[in-house]
Length: 175
Image (cartoon, rainbow, N blue to C red):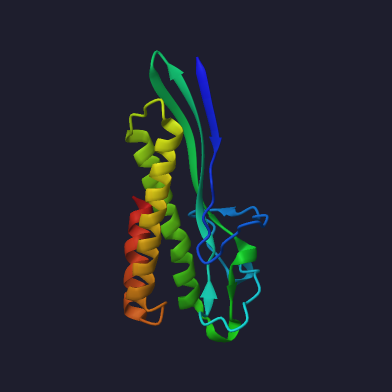
């Protein structure tokens, strides 16, 4: 019996952690919603946004080859990174916080999507590369979705659209 192990990667939106130690993140939870106290990062000089949420996906897995069939055990999680997340108190309100929370919630939706893809995929002997491909594709889709969200809500300035997104994503998370 062969055993293949791999510990996954983390993508931080708005933060490139090359050559730096990445902090331990806060896992997504429906019960624990973000507060402004969770945003511990320093506002970068000349930063235009009112706030930034650093969130991402991580995965780990073990794969066993049994009778020429790959059996996969995996974990996929969405995380929030407090020290890379920041806000400008004079420009933010509860609607802005809900916008930032939704970025984290969207990361959780894509973690669920990746879990579903991993569950429904039949892997070959090249399981490591196949999982990496699913991860990369999930991150690309997540990035595009996050950009669409910011564009449609005008970074929370379009109150009506923000409330619509809050409701739609909330419904998806409950299902």
